[in-house]
Amino acid sequence: MMPTLPEDEQVRGGVYLCQTGQCVSCGSCCGLYNVRGLSREGLRDMLDDRRRAFAAVPRTIDAILAFEQERLALEGRDHPIPDFHHCAFVGLIRDGGERVGCLLHPLADGNAGVDWRGLSFYGGAACKLFFCPTYDRLEARWKRLVRHVIDDWFAYGLIIPEHRLLAALLGAVEARLGRELDPDALSRDGQAALAELLRIKLDWPLRAPDAPLAWNFFSTRGTERTGFNADQSGDPLLLLALHELDTLPEHAAQALARLEALLDSAVVALSRK
Image: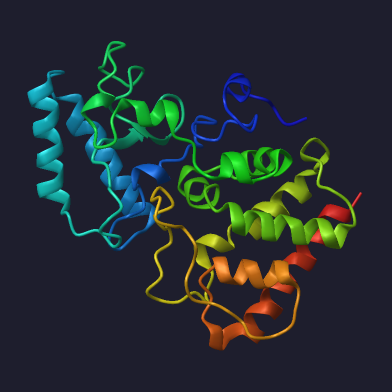
């Protein structure tokens, strides 16, 4: 049975998604992925550098704000999505595992229970009051499933905010199975197959080359994708998935065939006794 978390009862939608395990967390709303030349290795190194540098910062308002300016000068301010803030206080949390988190959080190393998040761009209230659209718009069973099968912070933070993509992919799987996915009844093979399917978000080869991996879903001005609009008949869930993957229109037929194969593989694994 997939574990529940104490925070599940405290969030709307009934499934907590932000910090879910020692190696799994999401910092997408903090602009984590809004950097040039995005890669897991490069991002991890930057976050670990921040962690080590912040450990030496005196816990005073002036010193913390000076740290922010130093990181901006060192790392640059030229972000792929200019109107999506990238927070310099996102760092690597190492407490038995390794995941992304807030260096200003009262439970972070060196803060002695003091909440410094009010010094960040969005302020301390954002962590308490903001919930990404996935909390409200994705079925609870799918949220629990994704929370369980994706075991790495880099992948999880790119995948879990994509509620439309997740609904399309998992809806297509259920349609082929002829039943709802039960997060508590998945075999290891089934979990691995679903993880592989969802990870197409990270390395989809038919994506428009100028499309960022993470969009500004925090903006109230709209989060809809622009790009793929296949003028053809087909499974609307698959067409939606390709749209959300920023698929180039000229690759429509190839993309549909590739996605069908991935879905077939997942269904075979999920059907195996």
